[in-house]
Length: 234
Image 1 (tube, helix red, strand yellow):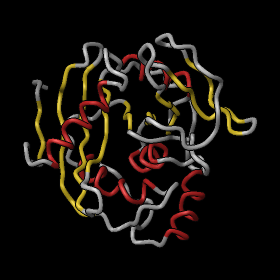
Image 2 (cartoon, one colour):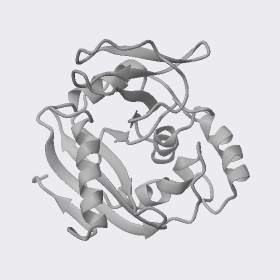
Image 3 (cartoon, rainbow, N blue to C red):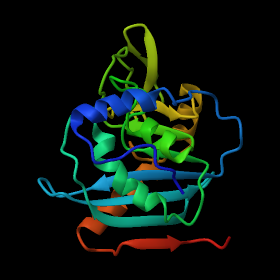
């Protein structure tokens, strides 16, 4: 269960002020405890719609076995504003999180952690809110730059914003576009890279966010219902 940090009923200007305040609570540090359950979180919606379909999926390492998921359909009230994604998507994700039947060790979100202009992407914001280790794994770079990657799988390069290291670009498959990994909260770059690598299979994206993406799209299309499922005995 998460503990509220602030109201979601705010203007974009107020949201930026809140981001700066919440960012002060972000802790970047190595993950030293063993990892068994990894969660992935994602959102799906029709273009122009304020109805959001959110999901959190839990996989068990090392075999990436699907252990549980939580899916919700709700409405978003915050407009699309670059750099303020968490204010648009997090209320739906938190609703799914709060009914999740398995408590994961770390959460990977489709978005950025500290690789953000104000160092508070959705992964960092979510991590502080739920007090869990979080990682951002994005398909596009939001801020910063990195060296050109060789075409080989597992090639990677640090992402810099001015002189600050804020993440790592990883080519997860040979000759595919890189993914962009950054620590969110209670993780660091090395831990984030190790965990994302542990979640990779034969696809560009880690299995944990790929599963979440698939399920929220099925929810949006009406192919599955909102709710909670557990796939293993506890």
